[in-house]
Image 1 (cartoon, rainbow, N blue to C red):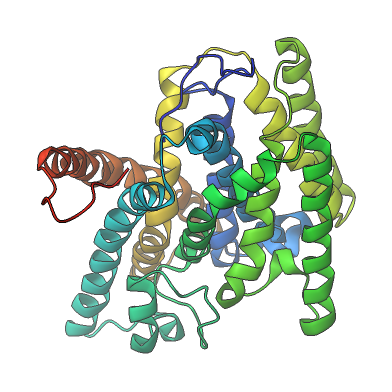
Image 2: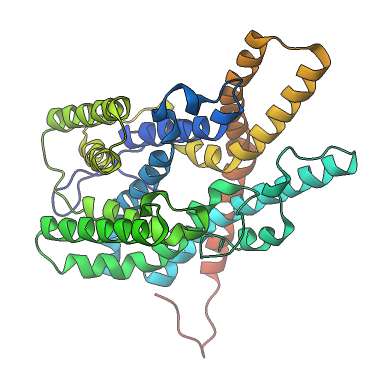
Length: 375
């Protein structure tokens, strides 16, 4: 996503590449990875403290952050007509779908390769061929029945595609309401209504629904983040930084005290707002962390499968004691980060560079006289 440090026309402070939001995105991605591997520890982390079982809040944070960043990045261009709905959706699809498809091909090749040499997956229910096609086209969160296996985290991309398609129209609609507080209140009301309706219908609140109900879970959270982006960001930088620190500490404190999901989501919204309003300068390390978060999101599932498969084989061969089991489990986190770095450097960045060159060549070709030129 293109982020700038400029001031928008309404005086709002622009997003900074390598700023606080990139750092938060990476930290949240690491927490989600920890959540995914928690039960692979010698003793399940979920049994050590209930807070470690609330990794779903990290995913909810990502969904809100997506709405916020897209609104801050594209909002003015959508209102001015600088980017249309079709063009916007095309850009978002070209950003996420090619890398997703490459990773899915690698995943399938790995499963087929290990099966060919007689190695069965530890959890074969996650690799059902009937679930592969919905993942290819990123529709697995559109109420597709069955267990959404393979590269499971991509259910959020499946939900976000619908959010992307509706974003330009939703942003134009909310812009007609002068008060950002009014639109935010409506967004909160919609979120709570969906949350409690899901709880009444399924026994599970909306923000925790299973992956195949990703649209119900994802759209209200995306809208919340989008509406937070309407709030004025002209507050002093020190106040924004203080609010961000207080909100972050508040989220951790709540998890230690018990399960307070709605309060936690409110604080995460405040954290996004404050980090977006921060005037802190960007850094190269934070920018790298932000880029790695997408690759970490795409690759962590496969890296974990490979890592823990190797761990099981090594433990059986060499007879690991408890200390060695914990050590090799803990090393899975840096292994996932290393895998994400390799994917970002060797796959995602070159792939996006090629797509940009292809897009420029396509734009340079004149449209036939019988067809209108897209805006």
